Image (cartoon, rainbow, N blue to C red; front, side, top):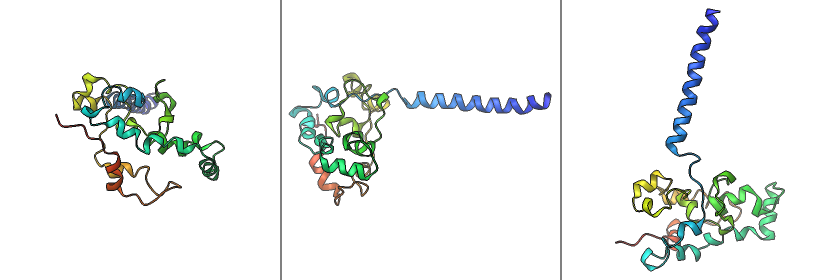
Length: 189
């Protein structure tokens, strides 16, 4: 009996450590705490107009804002079918991945205000905004980052996560040219 206890105790302690470590990682990383709220909640009064660098307007005039709509065609549906999907392109995870969030859509990460039909929107590049969208947090860049804001360290590599040869409509991707069309820096104060 004592030899079984000697073996079981280290195993129990090891499992306990992993459970504790995993729970700490989730808490520290905020995994599951941040939800996607959608462009309407992000932009609001905070990112539109000349005083804000016309950030919302730049997005609205971009192909990103129409990315979901491109999935609503017979051509897109035929591509989804060729990939082996039994659903329309607008319901195919492989298509939605880059035409909405830039990652797999997990329904539990979406709030009721998130509208995937608005395409590639703020949170696609900047992370789930439920916590950092608050003005009091957005005024402090570090607090915003702690609350889920993502500022890609390498924009070109980030963009190429979707703009790559895996896309059936891929064309040569000139980062500098395309970034010029969508860049939206905050105005200097």
